[in-house]
Amino acid sequence: GRELQADAVVVALPAGPASGLLRAEAPAAAAELAAVEYASMALITLAYRGSDAAALPEGSGFLVPPVDGHTIKASTFASRKWGWIAGDDPGLVVLRTSVGRYGETEILGRDDAALVAASRHDLAEATGLTAEPVATRVTRWQDGLPQYPVGHHARVARVRAHVAKLPGLAVCGAAYDGVGVPASIASAHAAADRLTGHPVPGRFGGAGE
Image (cartoon, rainbow, N blue to C red; front, side):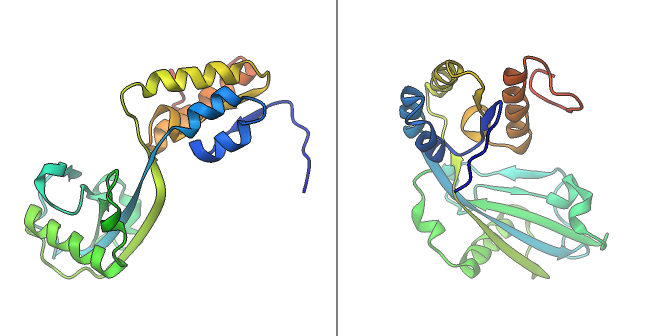
């Protein structure tokens, strides 16, 4: 019920909600955004004692192709990539697996315990890790991954061209420039740059750097 006055607005929403907001003022951009499809996914975090995970292979994780026939699509050896994830226990090893590709609805319908069991099974086959984790957590992201089919780059260009016709308006987010956190941050910096006409002071690792 509040009305805010602003010199500029950045719409940082998934494509569907952004389409709804832009429908009246930028109908062509809204139509393009309404066509962006999404996939849902779940992240399964598993914590192990370091002694139980000593046989893990080198590296920071692995990807699993769809033709491999396994449930997980990737695993990240998270505490190797980011030491702070283990918290105050340097002897803890934290792994994450992800499940859910575009159109895979059956997998995400399973309960948390089933997703943990499937992750442990696939990790055992891939790495030999069979120990019982000391803690687990399942985090679900409904419609969390925008899909980039052939022509997506051109669609994004059209959206931004339509939005640019409205002074003081820009869009950013995973639907445009990449689904990772760094890509989303860079997208936000680029949107702010377009509105201000110059790089945002104090930014780090923004678009074009």
